Image 1 (cartoon, rainbow, N blue to C red):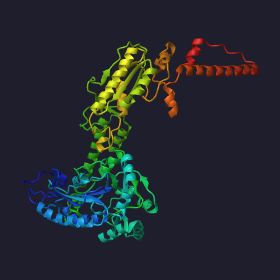
Image 2: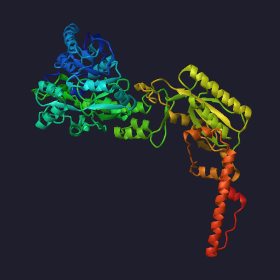
Image 3: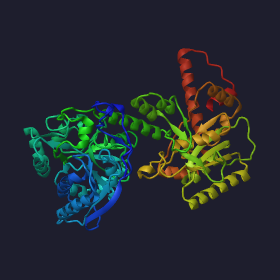
Image 4: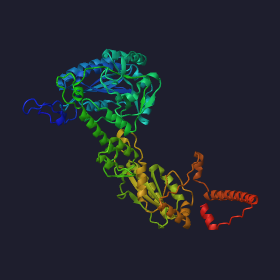
Length: 631
């Protein structure tokens, strides 16, 4: 019940009016989460293809009713007991009275939709006394949705007629593009240069009517210049409205700084909004920057549908951020503070993505030429830090940890067979479904094998994988045929870590480079053969590489910084099945016959060349050098 605890930057305090009096023109308040009051449902519960997700303050309920009338599907809306025009808190009792009347009207809009859809409107009470909590309301509305596809739209925008029907008609294909291909489907945004009624007519008229209005100067790209309202051209410039008006097909666009389109997206994959942003400015840009630059989303502009902005008077938050030109004494603006928060939030996202956010559970070992953690701790620009992040391979304890029963570094079973100083270690990694391929590698490699295995999350599946690996290791130890297998068992650090994408709702991915690094760390020999588990070494390769003369040449060249490359071949699906039972000795015999025939052909050619030129024959090299060259 006491006054709000507010942090007031000195730059936000107004001029002195009398001795010791300061006029605070805006507050950056320590906020509490939104408090849920009540949820209202209209219509019947049923399956729908896409939900319109929106939010508004209590004074914009009329806009919510109009928006719901233009959308023929499910709606999820968060309404805050807050007056956006004045910046005042609205009593809960008054807010409930007004929202119940609006819910009845929104329910009437859904009559005759043709599909049993539910429109959910939830009332929230703002815990703080600062600016309108726009991003907290957006997240609350997103949590109300239940469909995979969501249309993220502000309440001041109207979707074009037929948008929901188009989405419903190709729902499976759109889900595939939004989920599997991580696409954000962009709806071009326009605004009317007249009034809100003109905006409704444009939304109902479709693309031809909109194109005519643009040519006549009655409509233009949203916020493209100040003649029709606010000016922020970079917000929708990448959409390329001129191209959209002239084409009938979808096209991809690149993200650029400040891009903030309205999109159809996957509810489970789209990043949440940063709730530190309140009021007006940069609140949506950060989410789309994170989606494009850190989460791998791409943007695709839909060909035939759009949204139209209905003009309105400047809100209290907008006046606080940009200033009120109509005021007799315009006060300081919050825009510099908003920009500073935006820059700081982007660097925080980069730290989290690079594993330096403090929540990863372990130190990150930087690889390559860049130390991203040190760069972010300094005054490195966001663009430079992002470039370093994209160039950096990441492996740290936050990605993988030792499985239960293994050593601190994941070492589980190490071969007890004798090792030679000239041994070469085959370094590989695998998941539990590739154990048979590891066994095939071990049957052809007579040196040491260092294998890092990622165990499944389910305990029963992990136990079965351990049993199969233990059986393979015991068999090799009993046979003593030459292959010495060292096993490292690892598991994901935690569900939803930044490495596997599951925090966004996607299926976990295999941290392949972390596994490779773990297997490489477990190797104890100077020379290693880096080989994926899906490739088989040729029979006798280890013996040849360790032969006296070739082994010394190999060691010397590797110490000099050189890398030896092994040719790789692949077979068709039928050939791959036959490769397991190939008679390698017969193949080598065939190769020797072919080599002998080739050498005979070369000898005949040399004799002919000698007769034609009269040159002396070259002295034959000793057999040992010839053998080394063949090897």
